[in-house]
Image 1 (spheres, protein in one colour):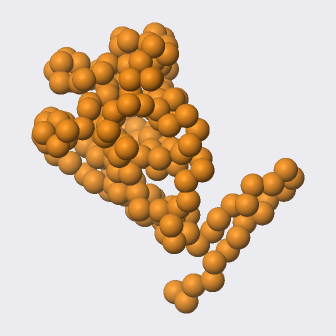
Image 2 (cartoon, protein in one colour):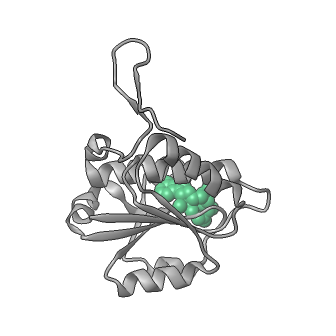
Length: 177
Ligand SMILES: C[S@@+](CC[C@H](N)C(=O)[O-])C[C@H]1O[C@@H](n2cnc3c(N)ncnc32)[C@H](O)[C@@H]1O
């Protein structure tokens, strides 16, 4: 299964930290790519630095129009999963999501356009209370992959954490640059 994420818009007061965290969660929880609209270019640099140190092939792509990417992905056979507190509760739907081949997950910032609800194959609520796109995304990715995302290896990592009961154990790979 290929999972990608699209982050729609930001708030009027710039929400760079939240958007960065949406990207970090996407990468760490097994998505392969994030598309973003209206963002600070520094977010891409932050994610590049993380990739250089911690490995993997996660891609950040800036886009002009969210609708273009949703339509393109639909044509490619991706199912569109829109995270919204108004959607159907995740508990009853996670099994169906696991059976899908490729998914594009849509997360909002401010009020999302009505059209997204109609373009989506699934409108999913992580509970029916307002909370955060970061938490909603993390829980959705975990429910879809059932924890398997944490067993993934990140290729070409300069640093790799060896999980330990106490303290910090980090394997550092020497490079010439
Ligand atoms: C701060 S919320 C804004 C919600 C906005 N009032 C609306 O009408 O969509 C930003 C994003 O977080 C996600 N989100 C927040 N609570 C959620 C929930 N309970 N379930 C799923 N997604 C949620 C949605 O993707 C939403 O677009």
